[in-house]
Length: 342
Image (cartoon, rainbow, N blue to C red; front, side):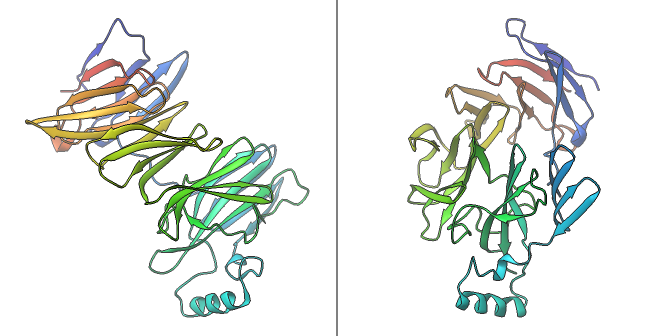
């Protein structure tokens, strides 16, 4: 590949290398002896999630939730919770059983909305959905890998199933709607009345925080905060501090097509606007609120997050392949590299 690399000498940044072409295009960022690769294509949806503690594992995949201790492996299909008397009344169990018999619901979960590890303890938020894809139950579970016989157990408080939905329809098989702030679990979502907020889950307790009277377009858990994009007009990017409950406006976007992304200790919002024949990519650092507006070569520049830099794939060449790569400093958003791929 022939490319011209413009590294702005006055700005310190990672060493950049380009590999691949078209959809296989990738950018290697090397900083302080460590290299990360940022790819043009998004990563494929995960088909499994695994946590390790010493010689013990907890793994979620198509078989269910498996726990391995040494050479012994036990797999839990998690089929009990759909009809569990700790989660449902007798009347609700009868109704759910009827729907299962009709094939409208299943006893096993459809997806893991999110999972985190704190020391030896692993936490999982599972979703159950019906044949239309609508989520009808989300349940947090804990597997303590330090126990003599680790197995899934209900976590939080009665009625154990969450009073919000992290997504209205079944999300990816392995999602990111659960995060940990110290020993506290946080899961944002929408309540049955349409309001939006988050659940704070601890041992023996679930507390709900309602933040917005309407739903939100998207949200991102990062650094003890929930960043989100409002659904009203104008479109606002806001944050709410999980610990203090403080809510602040971060930025206002001229379009509702806002992307939230994070890597390492940084998080950003981005959007694209067009006017006067010019396409502009705007990137905002969600913590320090610095903003960078970049004239783009094509209507749909692709932005990817890296710990050592924000990478922009721009332009539209043969078969729509990018013709330009920019690398932005992850904190200041100063352009450190402008690479022409033509």
